[in-house]
Length: 299
Image (cartoon, rainbow, N blue to C red; front, side):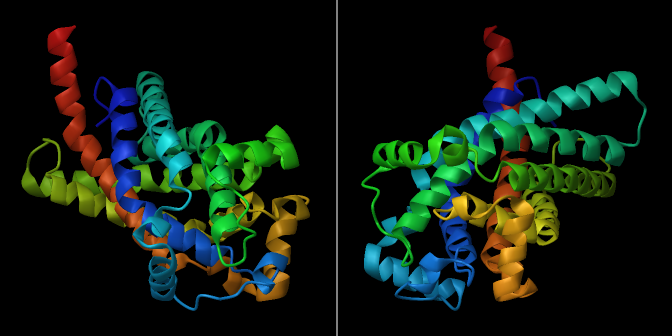
């Protein structure tokens, strides 16, 4: 599945996917930041009771552009982040094939786990830390201070420093990245093999089949890791300095909003992750052979 050029293919896939799915990321993050533990939220002018209300209010006040708040850092880093994930998975998978005859599900799970750690540490954390602060700033709970991405970067660095500003929430990000990819890759691989056996062919999956298999893998990972994602959102928001660590953040959320608060935004996250993972795997299945043929013929 990785092909000969996982970095280039992963980069392309990441850019296409985030352009299509960012509005769902926006809605999910907005709902997650509505925590009773948040002083900003308690002073907010509006509380969204559903994803639809969030969408309707945002479009009415800010237009469709409002659904793309926080999009720039995602767009800038979506390509590198996806390239890191796929290239790390490819490198780990190749190493395991040479040294081990482990079952494919075990190999895919281990390689996904490792790729998730690398992706979260190098790509996901700074992307989401910047984007979450931008979104939090423009939300009904936010102070609306950031005039743009560059202005936001300067203020974040001035107020929080480099590490606390751009790598806050690293711990839950790494845990989430490892867990989600340890689930997504083996579930997708298992479903793909089932479909290929049914079709009696080892050829790449048709786009619709790859999309459905990826969406199923994404749904399973989203439900399993939602509490971690909620903690990460709080740890990367404008009030991140309040929390000593991830455990303290989780305890604050549960103490003020109950366990239910850890699942705020689950609906839009499931939709977003289903679309994200389905598109990632489907696009990778289709684009990878094209790059292989084009580049191998030229070079």
